[in-house]
Length: 141
Length: 149
Image 1: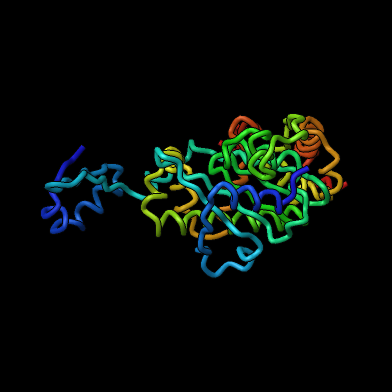
Image 2: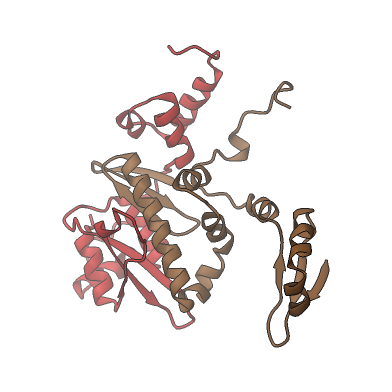
């Protein structure tokens, strides 16, 4: 599984330019470095690398980064990182994620723990939200 | 649509402002330049309202990541709240880049995201931004009751 160090190696080898920190007054922006690369027709590819470079990115997030931020296949990514064809060519599985609006409501309105939500499938999460909404008003049980 | 040249619009801005508040936008033309349109903030927000966000949440390896497909950015943290805060910071960073870097602003993949960029640009606080990002999709909301109508 890719780490943020792999991602930094990729953007460095791929000719990425570091983006200045422009989120004024923010506390957490220093937790990441951001890079961009401009394609010939002007498209601006942007990504960011966490300072915690040993951390694994996670399969789902990594898949989105490859597809929508870097616009490369996983094979191409590893070729750029290692300078050779990689044996780690297994495609990432695209698991259906839980929508953000639903996670917000289950945690902050229903009162479920993040661990509970993390164990749910999207279907479970929707069912839990519907079940909560069907409760009579004032029923805190 | 009412149309006015730049000089007249500048002289009659108060009237144009009132006009816009009555849901009547004005096209302002200027020689050797593209036109602009003056409309009320309420109309601006209403027009953009259909451009919803659909953030995805991943619980992976002890971290929480929120992927925002409409802007192709993400936030990450040890909890959902932290990941959400990181995502808000990332939006601030994106807006900072677009404000200061014209090449980024004109990039085709940024231009195609403008409606969503305008939506986050219009938020007046982090709370409002979070409301916009994590709004329940219209199709998911329970049908309004007669009493509510």
